[in-house]
Image 1 (cartoon, rainbow over the protein chains, first blue to last red):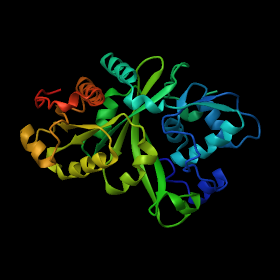
Image 2: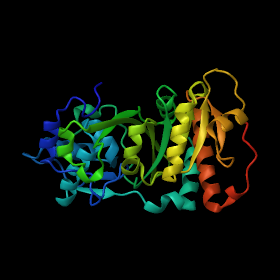
Image 3: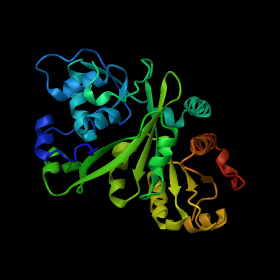
Image 4: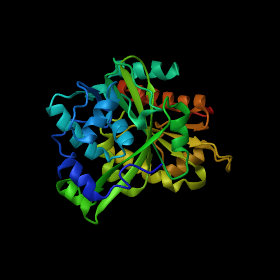
Length: 115
Length: 208
């Protein structure tokens, strides 16, 4: 299996996003933001957008979308911003305070013990 | 409505709303992907991120077209902890260029496991140095390759490891052992944030 992006020419990646970058501080998506589709793919939609909507029928992390589409994470973040702005997806961002939250850590511990 | 690539996908439950990150760092061949696979509910996936060497300010897609673009690949797996929390485990290479991407990819990570092969301990020293630099809490796990039987004291000495950082032995092929590594990390995080790490714990000698 080829690695995502590796077989893609930079020109193709540039075309997918129209040259925009997903790495700026204004991009709200984290690697583990869970994305949920709010609509079905529509005819004429950019194929990458349609693929994301299909993948995110159930909550799906940004990094899973990147792996499934074989695109670099930053490119996927740009595509997700388009979909979010159009109201076609919703985003469940990680709770920023989780690192220091004793309740979350306890939930993680319980979850791991139940594995 | 599944796409052709999604045959093997296991969807998350509809109530999942909080993604969490733990990073497993280690050199090539140390067993990162093995550990991730042992505990993951999905077959580990691979993805990558690109950046330019020069840094954020010129790191747009036009940079990807230039010769300075760097690509870093990483593996990940997933553990559904409960109806809301989903833990993503990332297997990350410890090489130098990778650390340029740490903040972008792994900001907000709960903590890290440094997986050590004592036959190549120098690979790990750099990872530990970088984690300390980024302020990311971590533990060290020695993957058992049946190599020379270094004592924990020898490993701690070689890594110049803070006595408060847990050091455990593991077999990354074993689900139970890998699970115990993660539990050790989370307990270490709990200790850190409740201030219990002020007391230096007895060195952990148990094989997990």
